[in-house]
Length: 218
Image 1 (cartoon, rainbow, N blue to C red):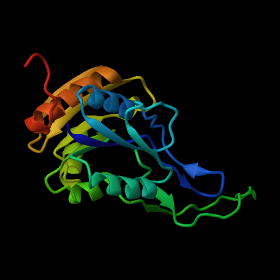
Image 2: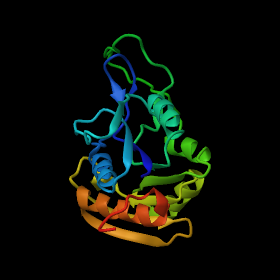
Image 3: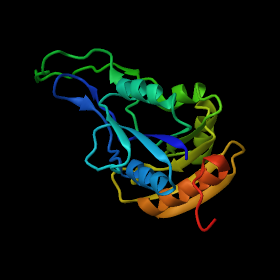
């Protein structure tokens, strides 16, 4: 049995006490992957941003808000895990300054300065040692080229390429690429079916046989 860390959902970066930057990630793919990993007999740890989905009851779930919090908890939990699936969509930017009061309209444009947040998968990938890392790349142009660049920059073993139509949707269309740019899997369908196919590939390519539960008659 492997212990798998899954990051899931969006994060929020607050502008003031009531407003924040985020995206439309729903956590549905993270949930589907957690279910697929559990069905394969693996132990699952989830670090999730704010979502409405319910994760498998057998999973250990840590709820976070910001990208920084996601990285902090994921880094801690990764130490005791065998692999990472980074399906979360952490907010890539945060305001340079966060107001301690609600910003009021004054009729004039407001300049918002943003700085990058830390990259969760890249940070964990750089520290992976003999563990495996699967990243996700959501791209709108130069899809495979950008996905392979992310695989290399984030020290991933595999990268899952999808597009914005996957966000807050019940279905997904993915390609899984390895470091040589080969397409190991192309799958479209409900996220549960895509997750099953994806985790079957992860089992075959990344999870050592002695970590897999025995099935069938002895």
